[in-house]
Image (cartoon, protein in one colour):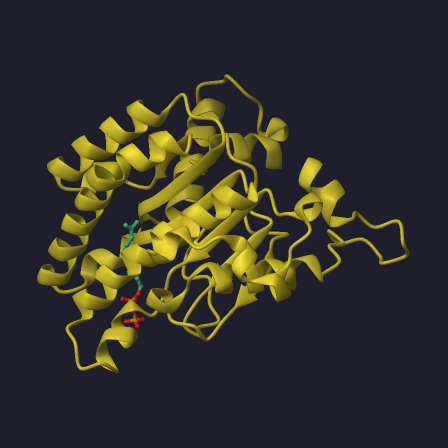
Length: 264
Ligand code: FPP
């Protein structure tokens, strides 16, 4: 049986409450290179194996009923990696989109992308827009691929558009507020993440969804991304469900419960 199709009943001691699931889980998939290095393999083998984790996590999140999953697949900074590694990753994204499209349709999963698409190779752009178009009507789950994405750049672009609107006299400076900025971000139609997972033991945000993560619960695990499977996602969800989200308020019993937060 392939890893991505393990029934969740395989993990009875990791039961999550379906009523208190995060609406949006965002993941920094880190540790591919280290996974490969400790095995004496090329870094790219770690990425290749990381693709299997992507499939397993998408499948598990879908089975659980998590409506939004954002995967940090390639950052703006990742363009500075060796050319061979960048080329390999682009080919991997290309192949993933082609091989997964049937499965995504069968599972009613919509794919969207955030980032600077113009920097991607034409072949990746083409297959990405095909997948986005093909899956646009799917409703059960949305997978957001962050490709050539940078959180600061996202905020800067949003600020620039607002500044242009002010300069053109379409809005007044005093009308600029959080909601307006939020509407200008690449994630304008996606709820803020409730849970951020970062693998490989690194304790950083690395320029991921900086504005959107303001009240997100953070979960860090030593597990390297290529080893991150169903069990690990369930562990993260259990940890999330053990938290009380206060959104800056006091914990007096009146603070927002996880399920109420999910409705917000
Ligand atoms: C970070 O690990 C990972 C990446 C920069 C690439 C993420 C890509 C995948 C998981 C491949 C599959 C993705 C999709 C969407 C099909 P790293 O290379 O920085 O690891 P290191 O810190 O151990 O060197």
